[in-house]
Image 1 (cartoon, rainbow, N blue to C red):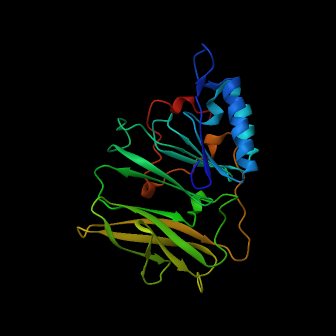
Image 2: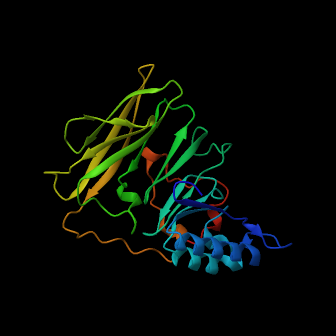
Length: 270
């Protein structure tokens, strides 16, 4: 557990001699205990498992019920798909990253998942793409809005993580059609922030962009679609019954081409 966030690692082949995916009695008891403890301690929980909960065989219904019935779970991290995918059921973000040797979707790379308070974010970094690596961590992208991370209704703190081996010297952001504003480092130069008042911006979707420059003068950016809703009229889309049916679809800017390439698409019950 770190920063008020409990990390729960589960064995998705704990089914005692049988083939396939599933959680046996010990894993189910462990998951139940961990979620109860997280709720009692008012912690957020991130679950790590190989597959979507719905692919866990006989345990699928129990695991799904435990996750959806918990106020603690924010993210389920997976890998089984062999392609990049994010699903959002309005409560929990499910994210899957293709293996480093999987090249159907493009150059090899890695993904970064961040939980900033209640805001979840995800982005894929191709190894051939330039540094620094910039990732807006708060507020939430519209595609990542959940019950715990709703649209913006008041002044906000914009935060971004920026990674670069040579060091980051400057970062600035732009909301909507406003001018770029300088951001300040928080403690070290891996997190940058700026207090921002949406002010005259109308309710609706606005682009938020953060640029960063490293010691070598190289620059990169990240952009999200920010939803402003002072009127409180936003209605969360109804989730699909099966978790993988809630995928957000193609999002090239985040490294999700939406092609669903890889060996495991045929198992999806579309």
